[in-house]
Image 1 (cartoon, rainbow, N blue to C red):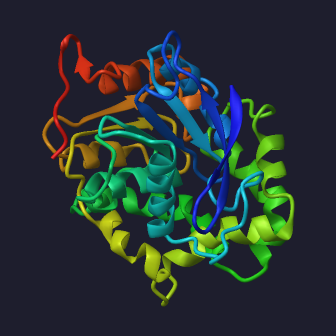
Image 2: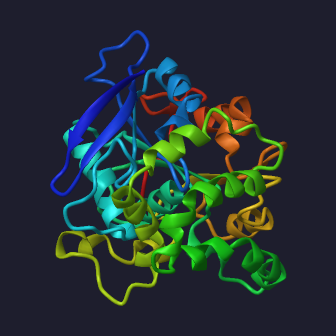
Length: 308
């Protein structure tokens, strides 16, 4: 594992990388791994090496606002800005049409939105813990709604002025305890708190939630991506959800499955909560590797399904 710097037009991202085993790093297909809240690129310490061992060139950025990455010059925390960053990483690293995108939590929101956008450069997408929003529009959602509203208190809290930034030291450990019951997060929490140690980074990270209800559109450079998060994916995706997730009700996975494109796969991961890639890494790695297939574009010896 190495750390690299990627300079994008509005933000500098520090990223962890894993080089493909037995291949030329610059020529191998690219896999971009996006973390969520409250987390860091270290969340991919199991999946990153597993993908590299199969021949992928893996990069996992600390997304905008999470140190050691910088604060964006435009202050945007919109989903469209996160999409633009992912596409910027693809462009900066010379990603090809065979590139894969894997996201968890906010990273999954970004990945789902890019899977729905016709200009996305990624051909294979995996989302963990957050399904495409529009896939949940059904009467069955009403059954999960009361519990989900209780679980989602932090979203409204993070939109408040000032208070979230002042209390993240207490809120973040609480979220990890309730979202992934029984998981020992001692290897994760220090890194998360270090990534949001100063007021500017805290404000940027909480800004993701404030942008959700902002009356202002994203800055002009991001507007081509705007609204994709409310569309269904245009390509098959893999969606995985922890069976004991204390953040998003596990019943949402079944609701999402009925609305995803043909060729998509979904699964509940037993023994895992919200941070399933850390709690059950062997099973998550297996499912992701099977879905993505080899970097050369094959699955089980057959050509992978083309993107739409």
